[in-house]
Length: 146
Image (cartoon, rainbow, N blue to C red; front, side):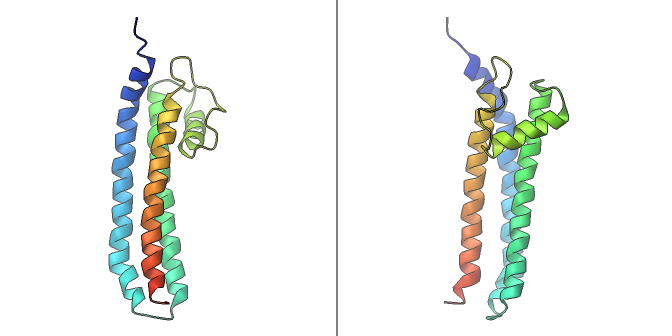
């Protein structure tokens, strides 16, 4: 007989994964629009490093909130699938899995051991996406100094 344990988990993970990617796209779009509106004018002010630093802090803040929204999405999935006993525990698990800080430390119920791994994979991809966007913004912000 074929074991469909991971197929069920993959299918269940598709919804929070898709929502996480969609929310991340919105967040990164906000970063891009903010750069177009506020960052580009800063490039014309050659020596205004303080303003550039504040702008970069704002961009990182948007990225952190974007990642947090993904964590919330997965926590809701943990609760809806009844994998954890409370919202507090769901947020804790989700934070650990999304950041890969505690992957394997907390155990999900039998038959769902891989679900957190799918969140971890999604989180790693979202961090990579954010890193690429942040690197591009910082590079353009500091290119004027060269």
